[in-house]
Each structure stands twice: as C-alpha cells, then as structure tokens.
Length: 399
Image (tube, rainbow, N blue to C red; front, side, top):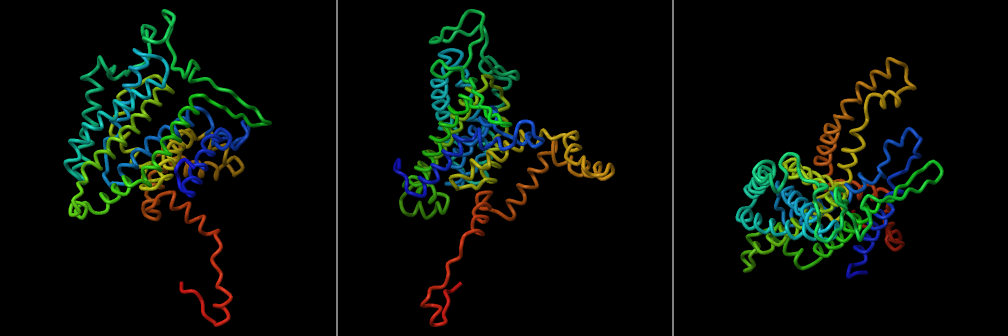
C-alpha cells in the first residue's frame, strides 16, 4: 500500500486509525465522573499531540538516523511560526499558503544554520545549534521587534487587510481552511460521554499522517541507509569515497522543514506568535520527547510527544482539592498524609514526576517507551513449542 512494506503499512494504518478516532479514544470517562479530568479529547490538547508529534518526527530524522544532536531545533519552529503569521496578516487568511510559506522559510533557515553547524560534529555541533537558537530568540525578543513584535509577539489585528481575503473594516480576521473557520467544532453526545470533532485538529492530524508516511519512506530508502551509515561510522564512509556532509545537510534541512510545518500549524490553531517558541527549553523538550519515546524508531517520537503533552496539560492541573476528593474515603489523618505525599508530584510538581520517569526510562529502557511496549507484548506471545521429532529423540531447541 502506497509503496510500503506489509509491516510498515500495518503500522501506518494503526497510526491513522488512532489519530482519526482520537476524540473517542482520548475520552474514556463520562463527563460527570470523577475520572473525567483525565480525559484528553478536547481540541486544544489533541492539536498539541499531533503538532508536537510532527516536530518530534522531524527531529528524529536528524538525531535518530544520523546521531547529530541539535539543541536548537526550536529556532525552526519559531521561524516557521513567524512566517505563517505574516502570511496570514499580509497574503491570505487561508492556512494552506501560510503553512507552505512556513515550511519553505524554515527550510531555507535550516540550510543556512546546517551549512555552518555541520562543519563540526559531536558536542561542538550541538553547541553551535544551541547558539543559533539563542541568537534567534534574542533577535526575535528585542532586535527585530518590528518583524516579530518583541516580547508581546504578533497576532492578527483589526488593522490587517490580507491581499486575498475580504475582512470587513474594523474586524479581526480569523484563520480558515477553504473558507471554514479553523475553530469550528461539532459535539457528539452519547449517554454520559461527549466527543468533540474539531476542524483544526483534523487538518493537523492529516498533516501529521503525511509527515509520518514520509518519515517511513525516508527510513526505508537508500537515503535513510546512508544516514544510518553516517551514524554508524563516518570514517569508514569516507574510505568508500562517499562524503557524509551532503547527506547530513539534507537530513538537517528536512528536519527543519518538519519543524516549520509544526510552527505553521501552531499558528493555524492559535494566531499568536511569541519569541518563547525559540527558547532553548523548547529545543530541549523535543529532545526529551524523542529519547523518551524511542530515538531512531518510527513511532517512538510520536509516543514521546503525546506522553509529555499529556503530563503538561492533565497531570499539572491536579491540585489539593482534587487529591482530597481522591482520598476522601480514608480517615482524616491518613487523608492529609496521602495528600501531602502525592501533591509534590502533581500540579506544579509535574516536572518532578516526568523527570523521575525519564530517568527510569533511560536506565531500564534505553530504547524508550516503545521498547517497553514491545517487552510487554513479548510477555503475551506464545513461545515456540519443541517439534515432535525433537521430542521423540530427546533433543530440544537450543536456548
């Protein structure tokens, strides 16, 4: 199917099914139940799942295949966002041109940064990318204020009049897709459950599926094999007469374009851009997403992105009142003790829980969450039984 092998086709169809049915899958609890706070099937969070999934998929093409660790990938996310917002402000309120413009501008910027940074490898490459990201952040924050809006950022205003969009005078334009408002939603109520279907989410989901499909083709292509050769042993590659630089630069640019796509989609969902998207912590976040899910795997970065965004948006909202509700069945003294023990790990302390889990994954599951899932599945697989002939002559297969 679509030029993919059977296993890759199965994986792609599974991801497609999970993505398209996300409003149902992410809302397992009734709205009125006490567990409803763990539901993640609302538009804003679902959009973050797929957008940061795209960001992590692109980063994985660079880091997972070549081993080049970039600490400045948020710069391309930010550049793509600024390109998209200017497209909406000046050209058209339709998100398609804005996203295309974001991809192209981010790719061009990645070409410049990669051409300079890839002259070095290892930690020196990582520091160079970090330096570029911080310079980009500083430029957006203060130096290029007319273009970036400085600390307050950019957004669509009532004074903007895009060339190809007719906005009534004095009104603030809204991002759209073929004339449909990106924020348009339909709600389906079934018993105690409520499921929201948002146009913006499904546009981002289709973009993520396309990005995931392209990543599969890259991983399975001769180009992907050359990137693995770069990661394995560049010196041997040089001995064969092949220079790794064109391949690493191509991977860097492709990865930057993925980040630009994510930045453009972020603007399509929320038409406001600020320099914080370029800060070094945003670059570190995508590194954690990729490593936590499983660097060098196809599905791992998407799992890592979803895992972190779930913690950030769901676990961080648990406060003491909610904890008291959970432990209300306990005697008063025990209830207070349990709340005191759990509270440092939720709410504002969600970073502590995430840090502990990340540490445990690195120690016990170097392959990330995907490796953990594979081990769990392995426990339920039937072990091959000795053949009848082997049992007859008393021999067993070697273990």
